[in-house]
Image (cartoon, rainbow, N blue to C red; front, side, top):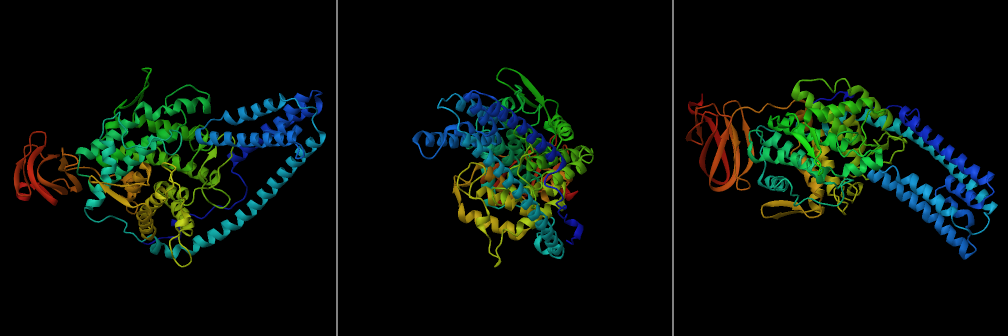
Amino acid sequence: MRFHPTDIALLPPYERLFGPVTQARIIRLCVLYLALFGAGSAFLFLSHQENLRIFGMGLIVPGGGFLAHADICTQNGIGHLLAALAGMAAFGFSLMIWFGTGNILAPPLVWLGLAIGAATMRHGALRESTVDMVFAALALAMGATAVAMATWFALGRRQRRIDNAYLASQTGRLGLIFDAKSSPAHAPEMSLEHLQRLRFALDRALQPLDQFNGFEKIDQFQTAATRYQLNFLAYGVALTQARFTPAFRGYMHEAQIALLDKQAQHQVWSYWKLENLWGNLSADPDPVARENIMYTGFVALQMALFSASTGRRDFSETGRFTLTHPSGQRYAHDAASLVQRLEHEYSTSPYYLIACEPNWVYPLCNTIGASAIMAFDAQHHEQRWAARAQDFRHHLEAEFLDGFGRYIPCKSARTGLALPAVGGVMPLAMPCFFLNVIAPDLARRQWLLLRRQLFDRSGAFRRRAFWPIDTGNYGFSRASAYSATALAAAELGDSAVYSACLDALEKECPSVLRDGVIHRRKASVWAHGVELMARAGARDGFRDVIAAPKPVTGPQLDSLAYPAILVASAHADHKALRAVLYADGVHAIGLSGLQPNAPYLANGIPITANAGGKARFDLTLNGRTSLHVQPQGGG
């Protein structure tokens, strides 16, 4: 495939520290602090009561009130100093809670509580020297912040120029980097090992809806949440279906439906009542009713991939995805209502991106939601996303690139504060997978800049670039990092990185075969789902499923026993079916999608479809067995 220089977007010039929306939020935050600073100063300098003066110091600096009697010479002074440090640490922990759960009440309540707690202590008059030291430290901190920001700005401008020169130099090498074939082989087939990996997802999907055996239960607020395990196992099954078994209904369809119905179980979405309460001060437990793309967008994509890979529209039925609260309250949703909610919130958000945990905006989550809308458009011949694509791209570039041209992981919608790009390669690599649907030129830019970190000067793969903590269960493993990077590499067509990631994954987290299922002991369920997606991947494979889903027509396998029969391949045209099955012994084979009452041959066995276009026959299987179903006479 030939590439043109415009196939890679250059980084926009770094002309100011913050985008316009972020700048407005930060100015508002600064005004809020100045008001707090003014109130604290008024208490400190105008009041004649020591407890009010100390309260004022506590308003100026979190935990600052404990400094009123701090020193390093007396036991009492050292105790106050330690109390101040502990208070500052408590405030820092409240910021972590705010980020981790969306609890926007935690930081101000902790700050106010520390100020009140210090003011209730009675240890004599406040030392004026302490006041001078606190204000001097504040002035020093502000000066250091200004210098750091100016330095960041200068370094960022320089780095963007260097990176743009690098990107321009790579235009002639794109065919060497993205060297995987642009389309999969005719009638691709899974190996037995691949099928055994697929069983990891199928076993979890095909259990009773209210059971979650084999899922990890750690927390429901961050990346180990059950909903993400369901999402990515479902994405893996759907992409596997689309590539390898589009002409197989049966348990592959049942698994996708079950994974969606599990998302509707109250234990999966009950987290939102708390998050909505402490993040938005709203008691509505419906996870779809307000900004919550981590549920609405992710489930919408799950529905879209189900429809794209099966040709079915089950979840387009009005109210098909109804959430039932233990109180009896029902929230009726379906694919169209989820997409409409996403549309509304993209348009009304100042950032043009939707928040996840209340008031925290993640670019990755928003590319998932955008992919869902694009898939819905393709399946229903609509143009919902076309009217929003340019605004989305503009805000993504203006508000969510850091100074060095990397997409930030998340940003507070209310304050404009952003988390730095931590976590190694994975949070930079995984967005490339979804960006390849929305803006392929941005995906290639991000990937080329990231790729430099993956190999040293000798060409050796740098495993240390990958974070040693599994996103899916917080354990010590690079499984999620390798899997997510392999996923993006597969979609972009970078076979070198794809192979290197899977090789490293196998060495560090070896596969274990048990009872016919392959799993990795150190890998999270989430990482298993992402790996399944990667192994189903092909160059532009996800983009094709989203933008141009192939119609499912002709004969299809149906009603096969699981796990007795594993389907490695099933492809059909409007007349004939070719499939590869793994099993031993005589098994009943079900078929659907046949011409009503028409005669067929199945591996030479004459069969006749009933009036509903279905048939059933017995077939002897011996390990890997090919199946060919065609009309009698070949006509």
